[in-house]
Length: 382
Image 1 (cartoon, rainbow, N blue to C red):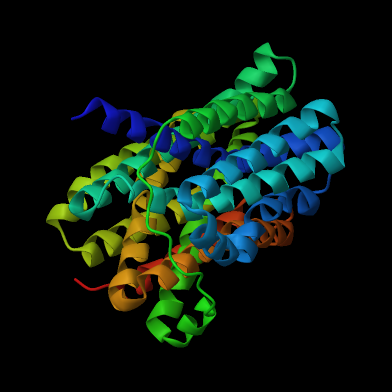
Image 2: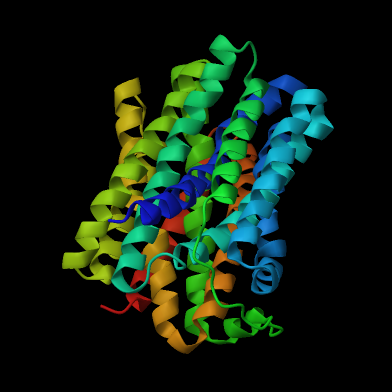
């Protein structure tokens, strides 16, 4: 493999590591709640501040990307993320904290829309599929590191909010590296002016879009509730409870790697349905049975992360196969479905309040989403 090719590849893959920073919002809800004495409902709104931008900005970002190019769009995402990460370092209060997570969501939206197409400037054909899968493994590895960075900030830097400049510094490194390394440039396309929401009139596309909403909702919801379960059921403190989110993401990383091979030898429908059935069973067990030990809870959380690790890819690919002549439009629409990360936390918080503050309520919301995905598997082609 040529040295120049590797030098082009590495900064692009490092961008997937920055992409994973968005998942830190799940463990941050408890820190923000304790820091500012917020209600359960107000702290549950924090993930919505991050993920609502996927609904608002995904398609406009695709239009801008057609004008200024993929690499420049990725660099803009880095600038926005850096601004958000250093804002609370200089002025830290409730407003700047929420603004920081809003900037993180805006930057991550732009990054997710532009970084995957940028990979296609380097790879094509089957190599592109493998490269994108590898990128998701890097992103999952970053999501695993997020809780560890937060715990490091508490234990060695004095306070949890010191994680922000750490994330900002890594993003600066990623942006500068990408800026100085040459990336093959794509041919500029005409700006798209159509409305991708018209695609939702196709019932299959609508079902797959809702599937993306559910998948991302489960991912963000598990990130948020895994920590709360350890605090509620086993009385752990914030730092120890971060193990729940770390276990979820390390198993998701491993599951994404294994899923690459499993999906090559078995039907997507069978893989999808089996994993959702397992996930549903595990969520109901967590909701209704006593949790005897840390090892037991972590094993359950990790198994859910493993089972859900490749479902986003399965749903996304199924949507593309349903209308291959509309690949670009469907891609933009599916990324918009990441807004599920903004929808599910408030639903979980509301359900938790109905159960007198017990996390059983949030687990039942996730179980409902999993049940929908189980039936959606029947729509996927064998």
